[in-house]
Amino acid sequence: MTVGIVGAGQLGRMLALAGYPLGLDFLCLDPAADAPAGRVAPLLHGAFTDTRLLARLARQCAVITFDWENVSVAALATGQDRAAEKRLFERLEIPTTRWHAVGSRRELARALATIGVPGVLKTRRLGYDGKGQAVIRTAADAERAWAELGHVPLLYEEWVPFECEVSIIGARSTHGEIAVYPLCGNVHGAGVLRLTRAPYGPPPWQRRATHYLERVLSHFRYSGILTIEFFVRRGRLIANEMAPRVHNSGHWTIEGATTSQFENHLRAILGLPLGSTRARGFSAMVNLIGEQPPRARLLAIPGLHLHDYGKRPRPGRKMGHCTVVEPSAAARDARARALLKDLRVGVRIP
Image (cartoon, rainbow, N blue to C red; front, side):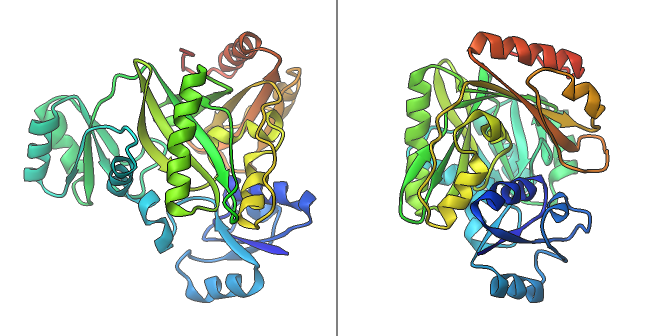
């Protein structure tokens, strides 16, 4: 059985690596000839909108999935549009930020007057890893943000002085079976995820996040992995955005859970029984950004699992990640702090 993947980045690569032990084959489509998944699976080189290649993918594959949401597939409309996400959260009674859609300078002025400052102006589409957004604290900030971003539909939302950020990841199969992973605690730097720890947070956070995630999965009759990211403010979970795909904050599941998010995504879209999401210990995952440290230096660290995506170095680019799994949260956090210091990652663990 062949699975088609629209997109051949590191997520597509890890999907293929998770599927080979299950006896699956893969075929990817990507505009980049050197895309990471192309090193482990056949690659159709072309645009995501190339109807000829999409038709070939459909003919040759039993099922088609994708490795990021910003592809030209109508069914992903909610995940591609931040305003649609906000409306969905409100409809499903999932707490989210106060927000306004912005399509003109006048609407931006109205949003600023209604919501106040500080706030964040974001592109409604194609923003990820801190791209396509600007923090507004003053009138001058608003002018600069409009000049930079005002050529596309926007969204303005309140700034949340959160204590931490968390994400919940779960799978729903074509038969309606649902499996949810332990909550992830995430630390970002310059808008990019740098560290994930799991399991994270007290049981009430896990219960609420799971409840919200199940609402979204059931609403769409979704198949596959889906993630919701939250701000935590005074113990309250405030939904920020969702990702209808395998997620960077779930990379720890490869070594740290009984069944990885990648394997469970494949099980879900193929209608196979979902695997256990039980944590094998306490995991910390660190993204390697911009350049890859020497392989020997990383592998000399006891218990470290390295994933090199095979990319060319570039500022801000996700080059790989590494994971450690420990028997306690305290030991995990100590290892995480040591890793961040050794890799000179300038973020602080809350």
